[in-house]
Image (cartoon, rainbow, N blue to C red; front, side, top):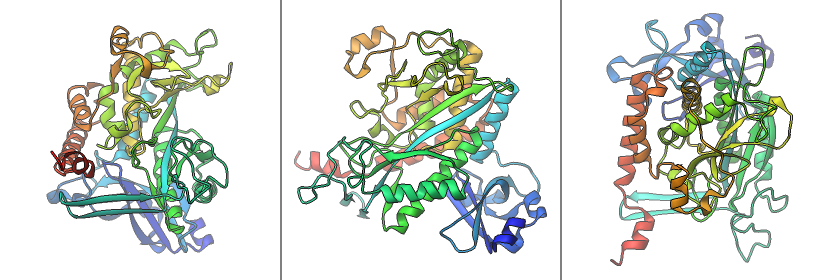
Length: 461
């Protein structure tokens, strides 16, 4: 409140996230901000209008701003932002379907077992000059045109060839200005410490921004903040930022590789073992990987939650297809980075299937639940696979017991339906039921429409 007065803040936005990961916002005059509001919350939310929150007959919800998430929005005059927690009205407690609440439950569940988890996602996305979608007459007239100044063109001598965009410099990196400005704003105004940003592999303005690791809830907050800032800065330049996993056929898609480590309350990294010759990975870290492999197929419904996600998860584009682990092997779903030897604090696991369409609160909570189940049950992940799994024969993979990730969202949801017990300590049953139902409806809706490529393939049958 002192900062609001000092900086002349007139408006306060409160952001929150739906069960499906969509960011929502409401704005109040700063005169309404008080200690009482921070305790009681803003009573202005119709939960029945937010997918997955509440029914129309019990729709009054309350938003309580989290003071630790306060930030000034530099591109809006005299406006600040909070991330809010969602509560039932009439003092009935926390809304169970608030994704941030699920993330808090995950952190508490880990603490009860003596663990503190740290998270570091690599968020990839595209920046396009223009996206035109003609959806006037579904099933008859559909077209999608994606325009990027970096696409291959004989009239543009500075084009980037397909799959050759990784770490390109100016002047080939035509979206550097957007990415750099977004990174500066994240660091300066939103307390998101950007460690690096760069152009990614795809030729169509694909980017990545990496920020410093942190706790589960705070890191999920930062992912939502990053998406908000990137979209806003891109719009300022008349461009469009997309976190869709696979917007371009024939080029790399966007992932959100998730780095995770477990620590004890004394600040000791429990994934590090200096006596392990393979990757300096502890037995506890191996059990965590065992849980990810055991539950990887059902995890897909949380970490790869769109029909488009499974157009990314195909061989040939550095996206994982097979549930195996290794050090430094990017054809495996779980990688143990080995850039340096003898650095206890850096030892972590990288889980590669997630993409940025995931709700980060639910995705991180589910990954943690799977890993902790692996530790609890001492699940052996098997031997690491140090070969390019894409080049193995089906018979060779079968002999090694390598499972595949689901091929579709439908398949992933079926897996989550049958393999969900490991999630129950964190996810209330009603949340899982609602999530599966919403996603089934979404997949059914999408499947009911002919796609442009179907016209291309089948118009002449």
